[in-house]
Image: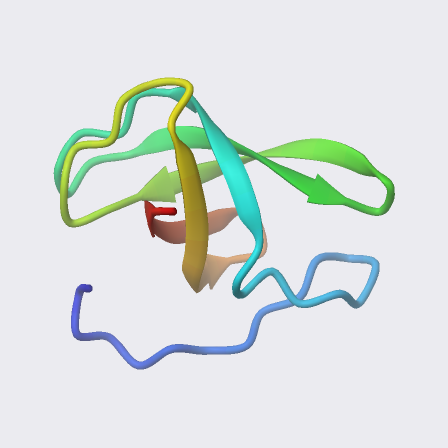
Length: 77
């Protein structure tokens, strides 16, 4: 992980995103942005995603940190 403190960020529904399992929709390069689809409010929403390691499209990931309301830090699930 990046060594940053883990913060509890919530989706607009008030549900925490930490620990949420999602799927990569745009490959995530090491230390660069990609995109993940996460289950939110009974549907799915796209979030910008970063990781310490490259993660390929269609891979399952878990949210380990929330950078902002629409950006997350993930690792392979």
